[in-house]
Length: 62
Image (cartoon, rainbow, N blue to C red; front, side, top):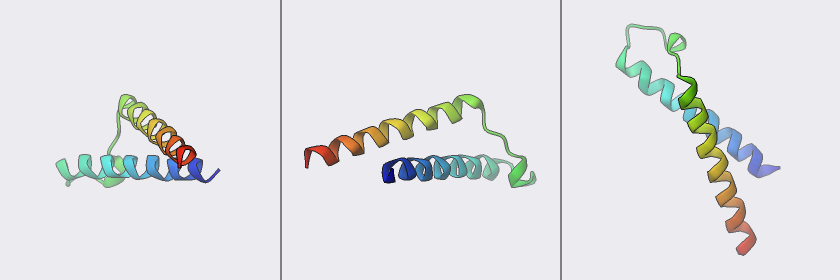
């Protein structure tokens, strides 16, 4: 259950980080008006899932 929570935190931080970088390109626009493409969100979900799976596998081998 803790690894699921860690994955959720990592996903949220990646989304916020990408939104921040996109906002830095257009600082005259409101931060909350920046939009992420659905493909970026899917990529972050995939990376989070793979990161989560890799961490769980490493814990089992220890």
